[in-house]
Image (tube, rainbow, N blue to C red; front, side, top):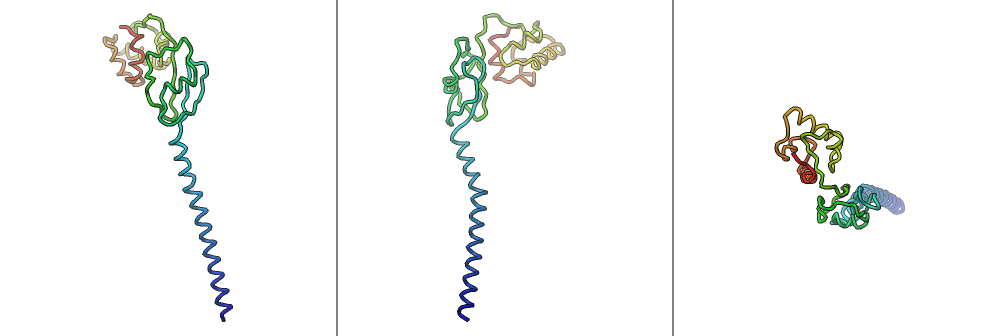
Length: 168
């Protein structure tokens, strides 16, 4: 009778240990990866640098890095225009930094320029240039540069970046 009781207890303990083992494995599989991903995301970021740099590409930087840190790694060209970019801005994961070339003092008149001329402005694609022309045709000439903000594709940041190259 004692042997049967001991055998029964032994089998129950084995079953409990086996269940405990599976619970621990499942916990590690589910929660272990989540914690690992959080640590990775909070320790570094990746940003893309292109334009007037010698080494365009994706750079891994520590959390809290600034634009100037990324540009140091990418090595600016002599033709880089830094007047329209905030070097002290903190970067976020997946940011893109495009460095434009220095422009001459020639300004583009957005009331008379065609799409090709307008698309030469920093950050303005051919599609956005077409939107500017369409707005101009439907509403008349621009009387103030801030009117460009009425175009969906243009943000305040875009306007600040291109305003030095625009005339009315």
